[in-house]
Image (cartoon, rainbow, N blue to C red; front, side):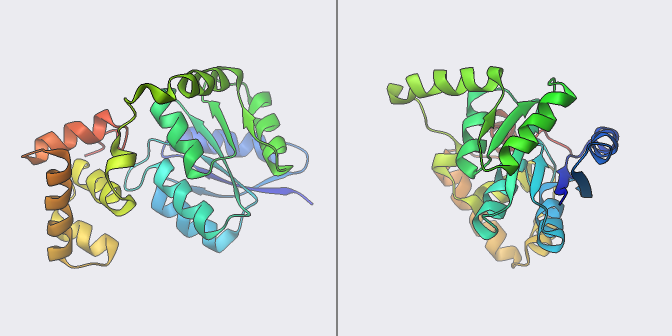
Length: 217
């Protein structure tokens, strides 16, 4: 039986290229493509893939938050991160979110295939470059300098912060998340209070620095 794969990446040409290559690979079938994290969650529920190839820097909902929600709801589905984000924070938070594999976008197609097959066999796959960064982060784990958006803010607050940073109006965010405008305004005030920030501009800078968004607005 073929390994069913969902590709989540906002770079459409890359997604289509990977899809074409994987569909020609023995025992693999791409069942869908998503251009942001929220679409990835929706398609995962509908298509039930075995593996998701997940980018991190996507609009509306980034790959880390999408992975966290998918793994929590559908723990049998495996996620392989394929990203240009090679900083310690992004890698460690993606793995904490539940990703079973992580390879850089600079990897060869052969390595991506190896990662998919390993994860499909319930193994963890980290490229040599990624594993080195993970080990380094582990060795410095007790330095005390580990505070980040992922430890300070809740998952909902991070989701709202990303949408704010991407230029979405309060009314639009409320509609997308199926909550009231007052709820979004309350969350925004809580975010600013926790972070000690005074303006939307400061929130945008913080979100970009923390890797929550690449500012698609």
